[in-house]
Length: 191
Image (tube, rainbow, N blue to C red):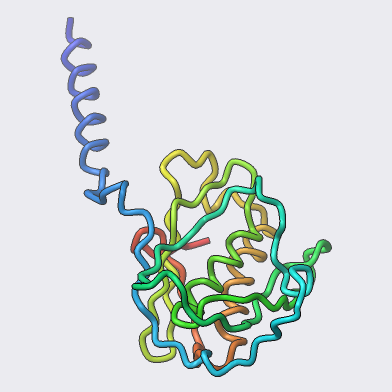
């Protein structure tokens, strides 16, 4: 009979820790990018470029991670920016030129990189990009139903995802980003 109270105590501790570890974030707050001033609006756009030259995917069946954008009229000027993706041998980044809305060029470029780095059982529910001085903070939001975590990605997948985002943000000189930090719902991602 002495063991019964210990079992209950253990159960209460486990339930208490589970409840205490819950953060109060609203799961419906998926993607809410902060506006970023973007001097990339002066970049020339090649209107005759094909979707292959721009690196755009024509596969309509692929799920997409999208950022919410605030545009009053639904249309905006498009600019060409370079995004960086890992090659098939997982040894080098290759630059691809993509068209994105000028008023959200940085946020949309991050979205383009994320679309190209979708892994089995790994799901993001959204992302945010905030820039202060020359430091960009990319807040990746891991979906609650994702079967894999950031740590469970292979080294090649991690390098492709995080390295591709960092290269994209730092190599576009008009954005003047020198440092990139990654967070998951505001908490730093440590790999």
